[in-house]
Length: 151
Image (tube, rainbow, N blue to C red; front, side, top):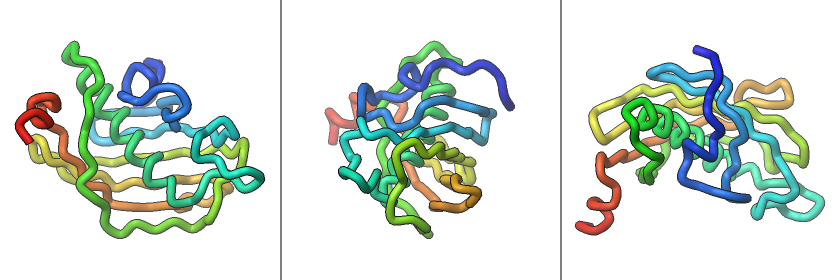
């Protein structure tokens, strides 16, 4: 499940300060674990407070996107847009993530029905394995450009 992985910038269609995850630590067909370091340079950082806890959802979404990027890379494709359909059972146990915090984010596939997928996600840190949890539903079209064009 572990090994050398490409930089997350090669896996996720985000760039610069909007890329909130830093490194893939482990991945297999149904699971991914990444690290995210909270930084003041993040555009969502609130002076002297940190990043709002509700942004744990974006950490989860980018982790799922990195897993998709790894899957697409295996077949010679580049990262593509995916679409968040929503979340169930979203819970976050902190109001703020502070500068320098090291968070581990996991996403485990619990449904993989072609273009529709669901992931059980967690954000861990501060010795707490459940700083944030959710069941995240996503739509992964084979051809996102065609989906957007035809919508």
